Length: 220
Image (cartoon, rainbow, N blue to C red; front, side, top):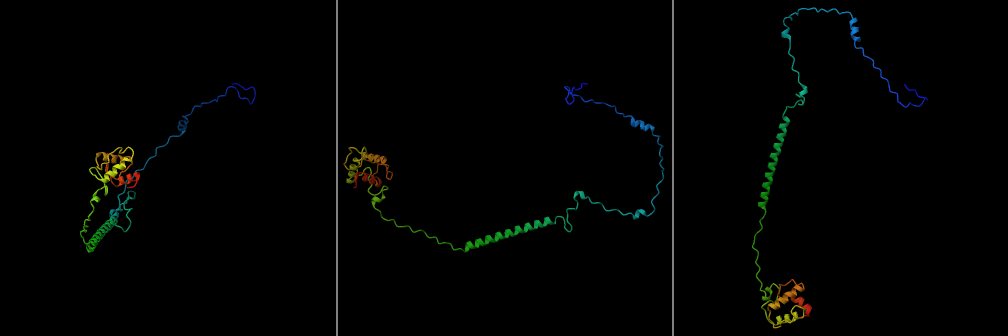
């Protein structure tokens, strides 16, 4: 076993603990039992049962059966109430409410029918048809009165031709014979397209086209 050179300084090798094994004496109890003296057998006395006296069987009363409270039994039924009475009362109340509601619905329906029958019906009369008013022949044109279109002729067409000749690249060197032909209709349509005129039909000299052309070429 190594010993340290100086006290207080631990050795280089740690000291392992020593375990001592001692054998267990299991035969000590057996040795104690051997020292005890043997027990003597104990005898039992036997005797005969006597018969019960006469008349005891008639005086015996049978006990009432014990209720099993663990399974519920009659524990949940309150005193003074019959099982199923509450359910019957609820069913009767629901039935009565349904009958009352049905009767109220019938009364309201009858009252509504009587009110509708008592209300006066408005008299139905045919609307009066207004008499047609006479209109001028020019008012029937969808583009307004004084509208010129292909096939027309006259001094108004000549005025239109002269005005279009003042608009660049629309009716250059066009005829002024007073006839609204296909060439003049194409020139009118070109003028409407270039200057964004949408109130008249294409190629038709209506109120919107006339107003715009006169504003650009001077009043008529």
